Amino acid sequence: MLQRLIRLNTVNPPGNERPAQELLRGELEAAGFECELLGVSDERPNLIARLRGADDGPRLCYLGHVDTVLADAEEWTVDPWSGELRDGHVWGRGALDMKGQVACEVAAACALGRSGWRPATGELLVIATCDEEAGATIGAQWLCDQVPWKVHCDMVVNEGAGEVVEYEGRRLYTLCVGEKGVFRFRLITEGRAGHASMPAMGDNALLRMIEVLGRLDGRQPGPDHYAAGIASLETLLGAPPDDVSAAVARVREAEPRLADLIDPMMAVTLAPTMIRASQKENVIPSRCTVHVDCRVPPGMGEDHVRRRVTELLGDEQTGGYRIEFSEDVIGNSSPPDSPLAGFIRDFVERTEPGAGMLPIVLPGFTDSHWFRKAFPECVAYGFFPQRAMTRFDTMPLIHAPDERIRVEDIELASRFFSELAPAVLG
Ligand SMILES: [Zn+2]
Image (cartoon, rainbow, N blue to C red; front, side, top):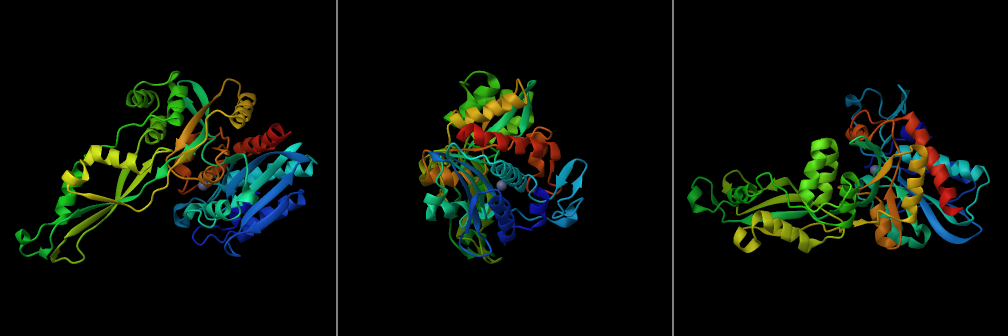
């Protein structure tokens, strides 16, 4: 199933997800699921597949997206759309993000359906979205906004984590419980235009900007205390930390790669990415604009971002700059403890006695965001168990050349999805 999915090119843009969705629909329908393809355009549908139980009850959703980011074939060892099986791996764009998980979810759901299993109560949903890699406006966001009654669910298992990490001799399966928010803004300085041949006649906004950015001096905002972040540090250190920065430093001493994962979870991050000033070589700019990509822990909004920026740059009045937000998406999260987390923990303990779970919050974005936002009671986690490759092995391959997944991990994850639905729905 994964090889067939990889061979259908769904690089977004343009996406062109229809053939992949039709492949999945064919498999799920044959296994007894009620299926529907729907979306904004014919070429780019979403798939909703449903297996109903005898009675009303909880709805469990296996979520995934079938689009991928681009791949430059010249940088790859194999053809990125070959789905080649080589050295115990399936290779290709999407193997990890996230056709691998979609294939495991669908294969497990089909095996359950074909075996005659039906939920005792509630429903098993399989939802495959389009357009996740380009903002989800016609994918998960559209489904949750336009047809919420069709995708309403109580529990979601999606991408974001599941790979094992090792820390001080312990094996921990990562569980993604939330994603940070996105607050992109423009940082603006103003001066006075003038002829560039007489610099003193103008007031150069670009030079003012350099002075403002210089105040960052390699620093990032200070740490934030919030439940999911603290839960993660508590798992690693054995007790809730008094001092978040010191706790992250301790993790860094033991395992720097894990600290790189934890560090951005614990604070607002600022990354200036684009700058614009004069339109002409001989005109002193009266305005300079820097685009700043800013990621914010779940639940925190614009006021918090402004406070953190002020701590580094001074306030807008006296600091000589102005901020205009261009994007303000508040991140969200699910509680690290819930019945669904309990079922996942049971699987981990059965699979690898002595292993634990590590809740994490992603700095990036996933479709889980839209489900938590639309259905406030819905618990959504990222969990795609992998242990032949650890998170430190998989992270550098995502959105990168030679993306590949170990066959043993495909087997492990397929077993997880085939055991989870009967455990949750009876
Ligand atoms: Zn993804």
